[in-house]
Structures are given as structure tokens and as C-alpha cells.
Amino acid sequence: MSTPSHLLSILTEGVKINAMRREQRDTRCFLIKTRRIWAAPILLGANAFFQLAKAPLRSILSTEQWQNWEVECFLALHGPEGFAASTHGARAVAAEELPGTNLTDFLDAGRLTPAMAAAAARELSRVHAWQAPYFDGGWSHGDAHAGNFVIEARGDEWRARIIDFELRHLAALPAEERQLDDLVGFLLDIVGRIEPSHWLPCAEAFVSAYGTASLVARLPERLLPGGTAPYGQMWRRVQTGFLSRAEYERCMEMLLASAVFRRPEEPPAKAAPPHPFVPAFATAQPSELVAKTHSATGMPPSRCS
Ligand SMILES: Nc1ncnc2c1ncn2[C@@H]1O[C@H](COP(=O)(O)OP(=O)(O)O)[C@@H](O)[C@H]1O
Ligand SMILES: [Mg+2]
Image (tube, rainbow, N blue to C red):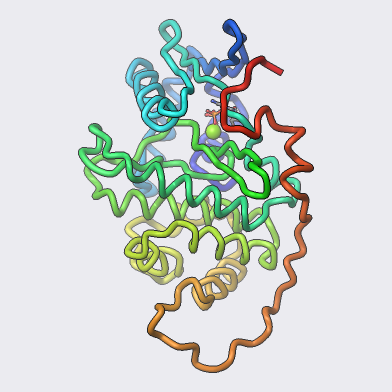
């Protein structure tokens, strides 16, 4: 249990508020996400929790507003590449299937690599640049855990695309606060799900690939347990999957001591010791995994598979 979505799962005790199905339209494949009729009280409960926990996001209670937000975000972020989305009847959204595999599949199989984490960071950096009318400023996701990225192999590189616009940050918060929360959300989602020796190089790659130095400079205040995070410890613990405090602190201290947080003018205090961790994760090449994906070209898939 490590993300707002997972939290919703706790609240609903495994009952899914949306039904997903795939649908072929001419040559293209769409994911149809339908909000179930009884979702409203569950979403109300989730929002009550978010408010109590001082979490900076909410689910969108109105089905129509949720549909419009999903479509608006999908089209703004993926429409320029030719992917389509629309509302579908009174309770559903149809979004064209993006090529690749859910990043959480790699994470859960112990196959997340630094290159994949870097691809997720590049995608966040890209989408954070959208000046969204709703926010009257830079866009943010609100639930940027690994399961909300679809990742596609491109030769030896990876391309990630963000999905699932079910939860939304509070619009009153400045863009920097919301976007910082997306970075924290991703790091805390993965920290509780892989070994520290595996997490560290992935977290380092994620931070260094994000690229906006002003935001990265503010990460330590959000990641340290004693930092000035504007939301409560309970909310943090949900995000980390209830990792023990000692383990959490150990991971964060390793990350914050790493070179990605050292300013260029600041020389290392002494010669860096050999890296204590051998990256022990499976090193499948993207080309091996491409068979699992729908496309390595970035073009929409031609058929539902
Ligand atoms: N446009 C899409 N392209 C590819 N896969 C998708 C797309 N939309 C959803 N999925 C897949 O369906 C899963 C559930 O969709 P998501 O929008 O994240 O709903 P939920 O609210 O249930 O998390 C995703 O984790 C992803 O694997
Ligand atoms: Mg999701």
C-alpha cells in the first residue's frame, strides 16, 4: 500500500471504483475506464481521509468533471503525438492505448532499472511544463506512482508516458509545491517496494534526470522525516507502504548524501569511497522486453493485441 490509489484500495477493501476494458475502433485500440455507479461514497471517504491527513490532493467527485479532466489531460499531454481520447457515455472515458508496459510490472518483478526511473523523471519534467488552465500555471499529476506510467523500449533507451488523471492536486497550491509532490510521490512509491541497494541507483537516476535544479534543491526538505513537509507523518507513511522509520531514514540519507544533491561548486569532502552497492537488479535489455510491448516506435498500435 504505497500510493493514493493504493489508499483508495484500502478504503474500498479491494473493491474497484472503475472498470477497465479494451475496445478496438477501426485499427486503433482504446482503454475504456468506467466509473462504477457506487463510486461516489467511496470517493467521499477517500477525500475525507486526504483532508484529515493533510494530503495535497483530492479525487474528483463529479463524474462529468472527472471525465472532462481525464480527457483534457490525456489530449494535452499525448494528443500532440496522435493519441486520442474522449468521454464515453455518461460514466466513462476512452483513451487510446499507449505503447509499452506499465512501469509497476517491472517494479514488482524486481526489474526496475535506473534508465526506466530516468524515463519517468523525463516524462514528469515534460508534463510539468504544460501550463494548465485549471491550475492557472504549471500542471501536476497528483498520483505520480510507478503504476501511472506506461513505459516503452526505444532501442537502448526508454520512453515513459503518464496516465490516470483520477486524482488532482489542490489548485490553490503553487505549481512548485504540486510538482515537488509528484517527485516525492514517485520516490516514496518505489522506496517501499524494492531493496535499498536497488532503490538507490534508481532514485539517483530519477532525481538527476528530472533536470529542474530549483525543484530538486527542495527535495531534501520533503524527504527527510524531520523536514518541513506541509503534510503529516501518517500521509508519508502511506506513501512509503508503511516502511519502518529506520529503513526509510536510511534510504533517504543515502540518497541525500549522493552526488545528485551536491552542488557543482561544492567539492566532495574526500575521495568518494567505492559505491557500496552493486546494482543487483536484473539487467534485461530493452530489446528483450520489446516483445511485451505494442510498439517501439512511439506510433499508436495498429491493433488491439
Ligand atoms: N491509455 C492507456 N494506455 C495503456 N495502458 C493504459 C492506459 N490507460 C490505462 N492503462 C492501463 O490500465 C491500468 C489502469 O488504468 P488507470 O487509468 O491507471 O486506472 P486506475 O484508476 O484503476 O489506476 C493502468 O495501470 C495501465 O496499465
Ligand atoms: Mg492508476
